[in-house]
Image (cartoon, rainbow, N blue to C red; front, side):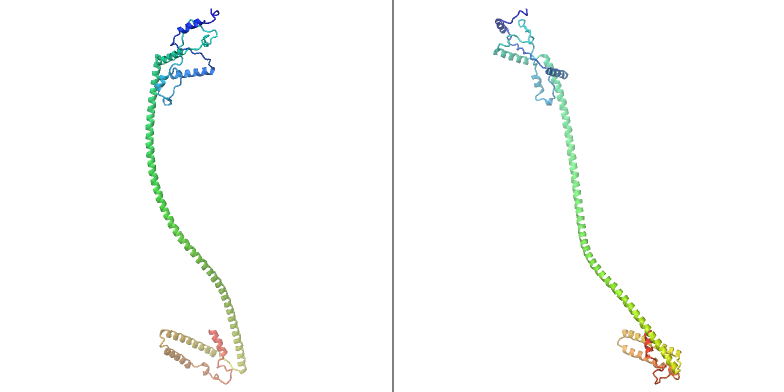
Length: 368
């Protein structure tokens, strides 16, 4: 019979339209889905079953939700309407796509559309009892999560408050310590600056004195070098002069000695010619007497000088007395040659009793 059926007639279609329930929702046209969409829907369904959700939507944290959880729970509704039982008068097509022949081609009336929307709103307003139980479970879960989150938030706030208080206390203590340290550092810096100023002033004074002393030292060194050079030259000159003086005195002594030797030889020759023998002892005594007289004269002169220094007004009388005393022994001392006969002075210029002036000069030179 299915093969002989050719479709609905116009009368049958009219009758179906008249007998159709206005509150019955329009059957959705099935849409072919790809393999990826099917896998995705399957994964979403598994995840919703794990989390206890029926509609397959992933659960979110309360702080991630944009609206209140109750409104979200109330807004959820079953998207797939209950399938309408096919009437015996509406057979399916042989192709299996679910389309009724002739229905898609005919336009739908606006009254039917309004009745369809009213039926949907009635379904939303009157949910099934299973949905209510699930909503209550969701609300309880969300409330428990919300309370846990609130407790955690309170704990975190208390911890943050304590941490802030500790940080403020630590900052205050550190600031006090830093202020005390800065005060100490400033005081130490001032003391060091004062010491540096004192040291710098002392160093400046000492440097000026050192510069002055170095200049004076350089002048003294130059003068010392000049004096040393002059001293060395003077010493060398003195040494040369002393050497020349010694040489000249030696030469003079040798000349005088040679002259005296010649005189002695000459006198011996003359005495031999005159057959006169010289008394050597008398000559020696005469020389000693002359030396004593000279020594007495020198002592008298020294005494006169000392007396003049002590008492200058009476110096003339004392000097006259000393001169008289010195003259008296000269008068009283007789010459040994006058006592002997044949030794008196004669007209002969070469007599032995008359001393030679050259011999006197020689004796004076030897005495000096």
